[in-house]
Image 1 (cartoon, rainbow, N blue to C red):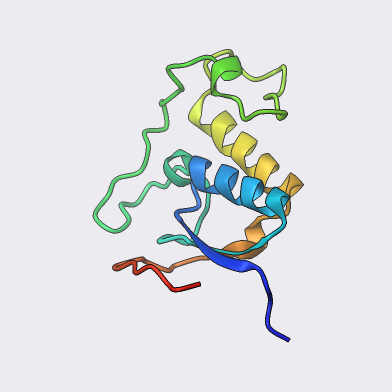
Image 2 (cartoon, one colour):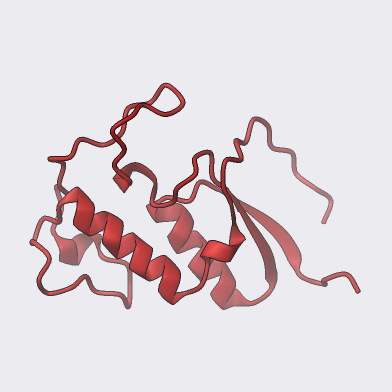
Length: 122
């Protein structure tokens, strides 16, 4: 039997994409699919030594320019032991924990580049 939920695409499995999938899942009326261009999630915060798709990774010394309290996702405070201005590895870990807690990784199609978007009638 086909789902009565509306289909929705989330483009990118980064910080905003993960938060969007959690919010959509909580609504409970969407069939969610996230298209992630790379083989990883957490977007910019996922450090890689190699260049991927012609785009360099975040620098290993990068940290947030806003405090962890300001940058936090609602109802999911960062760990107390994290620096006030979280380092890239802490942000990456924070996003991973949030995604796993809300079980949204199952919606991500990795290595799926979006090249065109069209609105559907549904």
